[in-house]
Image (cartoon, rainbow, N blue to C red; front, side):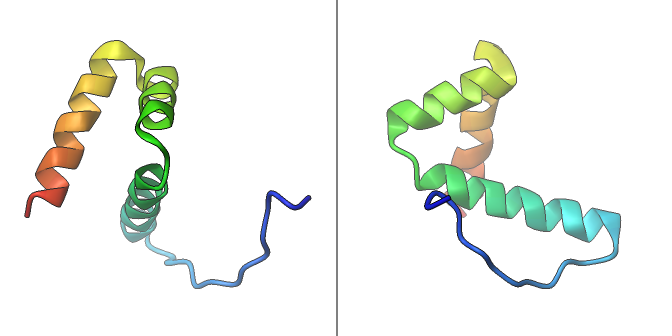
Amino acid sequence: MSDYKISVGIVPTDAYEKAKRDMLKAIESIRLLAPVQQQKLAEELLGTVGFANFCQLLDRYYSR
């Protein structure tokens, strides 16, 4: 159980705001992974084409 931590937070009730918050949190979590782990995770979840699109999304998001 040492791979987990207990936390308390506030969750929005609006579905759109919750989805936006979850997506931003996921992007931040992915940034903490090593590049090889990022690629493996993206390919597992999105496939190769989806991985390329996801990389473009991250580039656009973080180049602001």
